[in-house]
Amino acid sequence: MTRTHFKKLFTCALLPAALSLCASSIALAQEPAPATPAPTPAAEPAAPPAADATATDQPAPPPAAAGDIAAEVAALRAEVAELKTKQEEAEAAALLNEGAAPVTEATSGDEALRVYGFMDFGLDKFFTGADSGVAVVRPTRANTFVFGNLNLYFDATPVENLRCLAEVRLTLAPHGEETQLAPPIGMEYVRQNTTTFDFSSPSSQAQLRLGGLFIERAWSEYEFSKAFKMQWGLFLNPFGIWNLDHGSPTLISLMLPTFISAQMVPTRLLGLHAYGSQFIGNSEIGYALHVTNGRGPIDFDFSEDKAVGGRLYWANEGDFGRFVLGASGYWGTYLDQQRGLTFAGGQASVGELKTVEYTEQVLGIDAALDVGGLRVRAEAVFHWVNYEPGRVETAISTDGGPALYLPNRVEFSGYLLAAYRTPWRIEPYVEVESMINKSAILPRWAPGGYSSPNVAVLYLSAGINVELTTHTQLKTQLVWDQAWARNFTNKNTDVPILFVRLVDSF
Image (cartoon, rainbow, N blue to C red; front, side):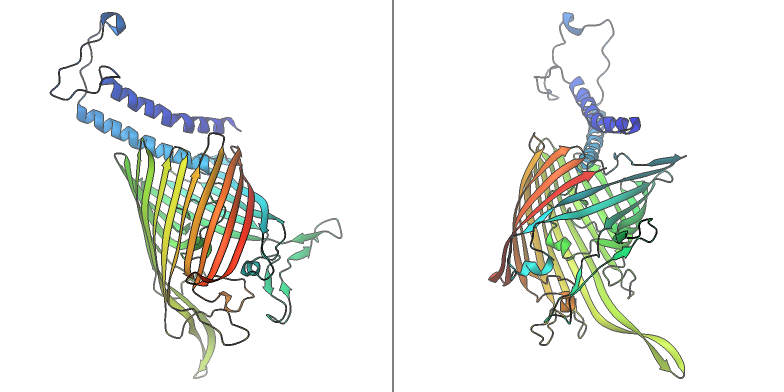
């Protein structure tokens, strides 16, 4: 740890306490005795202190105006609340945010580049039979070690108020992905194999398994004020609280909520994003607005319709703790098309054929409560999908028969999670999640890529997170997965699943 890093962490840890002490001192200076409540305007003034206590030859300074004191205390409280929030985020992210220690740091004038990140490794076990529906989405039912996330952040501040951030994930995919099963599903079994000879190695038998790189986000941001920041590029959708609590070091539960993992709402957007917040006493009001390409088969927009969305939240922090209540929304269109050459009058032109087209709206509400070591999170999301006639998505075929199509629908997903941070750096938690009327996404070998619609799922979870060091966490989650065909009838899945992850941040 460098001396600069130590100073940053020391300042981050002590500054909120110092500001709180300062605010308390201002308030206590106006009170004659700590045990006596402040007198009302009609009450008699308190008796002066005894001469042998703190008497001096200097005259007492005139009392400050009550309005000035209240304004100064409110400003200090707002600043302390903001610093406390940033400190908690930095601790939860294990130094992945503003106070992180860079792996490499280059400075040139006002320009600074920081590189930091996190990685996780673990174990998965599905307690299921070969005929279970869960076995469809996993290549094995055996105990297996898992290489999870390896995310790197490149964070730069070229000039004052301008920040550029890129987050990339290094992954072993697509090696090992099954793209076609053996008959009767396909003609032959096909599994991705990215193994290649390492011709640059002095060893003649050296081989490599090529992986992939996934861009989580890449944006630039200019801060005009705390109440107005403009962001452009590829950013995380500011929808709810879970999608913004990004990264395995910060998330309480290992398994993502269904509305994120099943993409009921787009998790990443390409476009413009404005957001900010304002403190009013002990409360904070924040907003986010964005205009983007929306959801699509590629990053380009095939239509002139732009997607819009936003979020509004209210947060209050007091002696009881911190409470946040928010609402998020998204509206957009989806269009997929095929292009082809046409010839007319001896000239060739490019034409488009629309294949899938729908309009979607997503509405979410969320609440978060932090009281001492208790953390409670809850979200509910509704997703409306309406297709254009003749441009619907295909669902999985049944026994080689006619293909099924996804209908216009309203999907629901919600969860409730409660966790408690003990003094021993151990955090147990329980979670319940429900999904209704959802069309589950299947691997690429499944025709159409979707299951039949109207699936109902219930997840019951219990987990425990252990902070081994300030940079290392051991996370364990046991999930009981239950699925029904529709309306919670005809259960077809009843499977316990165990996830274990060792998460390191750097």
